[in-house]
Image 1 (cartoon, one colour):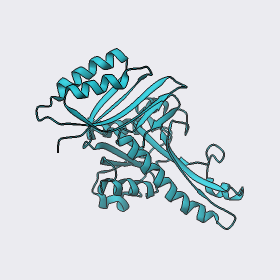
Image 2 (cartoon, rainbow, N blue to C red; image 1 turned 45 degrees about the vertical axis):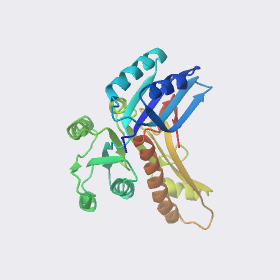
Image 3 (spheres, rainbow, N blue to C red; image 1 turned 90 degrees about the vertical axis):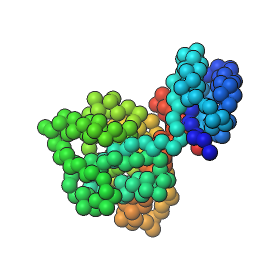
Image 4 (cartoon, one colour; image 1 turned 180 degrees about the vertical axis):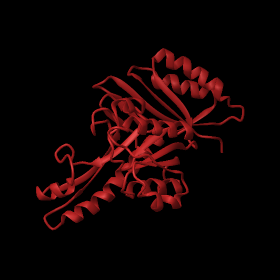
Length: 284
């Protein structure tokens, strides 16, 4: 079977977009395997994710992209074509908790996630023995107020050396500077408990328990300079009641965090996410 390609496109919504792309695919003897689109009336923006397969052995990807470039220029669109089989090189960052990192690494191992983990970076050495069985380079870069700039430069050095296309803060308990957030815009995903901003600070699950909340959850989002307020990729929740202890909340929270983060990374790596202002369009 020929390679499947993923075409993503976003532009100002107007008539004729799908017709133009379908015509180009037909001209190059390509079969549309899957297609999802959405026109947002609020922002007047059109979003498209389309999987296609060439049906001819003479398919010329360069010629196809050249024709798509003309369409993209005419539509003033942001567009991209990626082989579906391509795995996204990913840097995983942790501190002292391993549940999110293990979920990502296991997902990559069983091919649930189309990512290629290239390294693990931590501000503490604690998880080096725990995560060594994954066979990845483990970099320890301590972070202090006076060394934050050097630590972030070390992070970017690792990103450059490994070719990492995505950075995941898998319970990395350090705040990135505004400059780092800008450089990683749309390429860095974070996970946090959904009690923010209501329960900011230390021991959020215990504080939520004290307040008798009836729902707990976790949110995965793109990292921006606005702390924990980046465009949301995935959220999961679970009902709780008075019979649950604070320890139950913490245990349930670990599972919810891992689930939300895996869903977010999967959506991003499968090119199903489009940023739409302060929010996202995430195709199923």
